[in-house]
Length: 171
Image 1 (cartoon, helix red, strand yellow):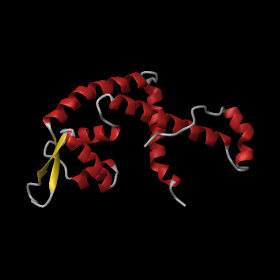
Image 2: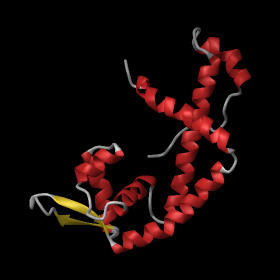
Image 3: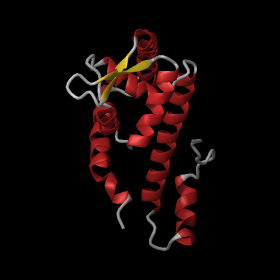
Image 4: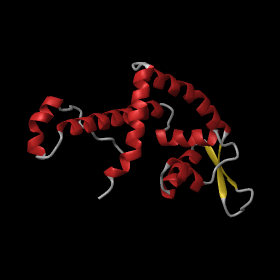
């Protein structure tokens, strides 16, 4: 699905001036912080998707490949879904697309012949070994703009955000 977000962001001053028109109780600084965070998240997704597309991957496909690379005995689809926080239907689609390109394979579960586990193929391992260093290189380039103190400060703030993010979905 396409990631949609504003290409031109309002300034803090513009928000301050217009916030009362949008919502009288609106805190313009809160809204600006939220807009900036959404912009960063969207741009990260778009740029990483662009990187992964060079290898006929997506960030979701790559995440599954990394999980499977770290789990040589393989994982059941339900385990994969739980570990990446998606539905069984979403995992099935990802597995099917990776299986068509021979990056993963299904094998019968050792203990339960009715179930199967997903394993990374040799081709999948080779792709991981090729892409992972390039991925780490890009992450390092991005974060090189920040010193360790700034990264620690951001980490603390983002950990707090993660712990309260479910408030966005509450009624």
